[in-house]
Length: 404
Ligand SMILES: Cc1cc2nc3c(=O)[nH]c(=O)nc-3n(C[C@H](O)[C@H](O)[C@H](O)COP(=O)(O)OP(=O)(O)OC[C@H]3O[C@@H](n4cnc5c(N)ncnc54)[C@H](O)[C@@H]3O)c2cc1C
Image (cartoon, rainbow, N blue to C red):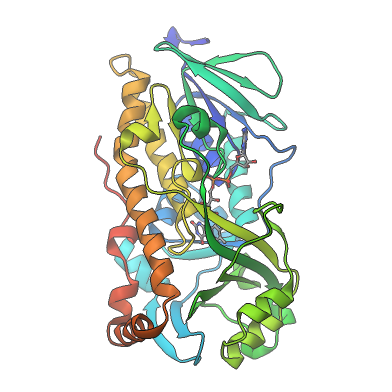
């Protein structure tokens, strides 16, 4: 291990270069650690789809000095509206825009995932972190003194901490917790992106709209400074057993059949889009305690730790919040009075409950969003009366106050 100015320079190895891994590389590198990030893929990339970020997440990005970069690519929707997918009727509304800034100190933004990934990558490239592509982490072992990692077929690497940010099918988690594979949820996500200029006027929008129907919902919002529209349709179903559950081209006719009972306005939107991609959604039950998010010198972050259904639009958000917390605790771990396992346990303590709460709420939203019969009737009535109260979530959008 290196020495800098007589001090031991601590080394972190991050497995995975998605949104979570890059955010972790940025925060730990800025915290004064020597960081190496190993990404399995031969190039950094993100799927062609959108992502919503609540003010809790945008505040973190602003804190990292990324406000301008975000402003250049994001859209800033004015409101979130909920509509019945069956009747098209407006059910409830949450003001976003200035209202969010006023309430929570940061805006609610929607953006292309590749734009978010790119702005994080550029920020990491301005640090001393070293990025290795085509370099899958294969295995690791740890003692009280160090972690030894095998990656990309190269020689073993020793480091002070290993961060598993390697996504829902995490190799690090498999080895650390051995708690089996994520569960298939029986929900399918169809995603498509379209230039707003190519749409008829009535289908263009600068707002977030959520359409709720029995056993399905659809979310649409602007990305790329509002020039493009992202649409996600979630229905119940399974992909064929021999198909990769992750990102493959979808049959638009299957989606049209799943949305057959929807109102004309929603069907018109869906029919106007082409190039649908399909994901079979997987998740895990929330963790039971901090002891699962960090063990010794190895910690989990993002989907590796808490893969969730996207019904609260906070999976990437929690990965970014994890990364911010990791940066804070690893900065303290440079002080010789704190050892790395203790500080990683502190990171886990400060994160696991919030992640578990968000995961549980996302899963509950699935039942509410897709309700039928009496539950659907009650949901619609409650939204009409209490709309903004139900849709605003201070516990979530207010972010976290740290316990150091
Ligand atoms: C339909 C849908 C809509 C969503 N909408 C939202 C939203 O609006 N807002 C939001 O906040 N979240 C949303 N999410 C969730 C969000 O996409 C994820 O939570 C987030 O991308 C997780 O990031 P990550 O970096 O943890 O994992 P990933 O993005 O999966 O990145 C993991 C990385 O690790 C790499 N890797 C894997 N194995 C290894 C290995 N052994 N060695 C090295 N590298 C490895 C992979 O190649 C990948 O680059 C949505 C998800 C879905 C499916």
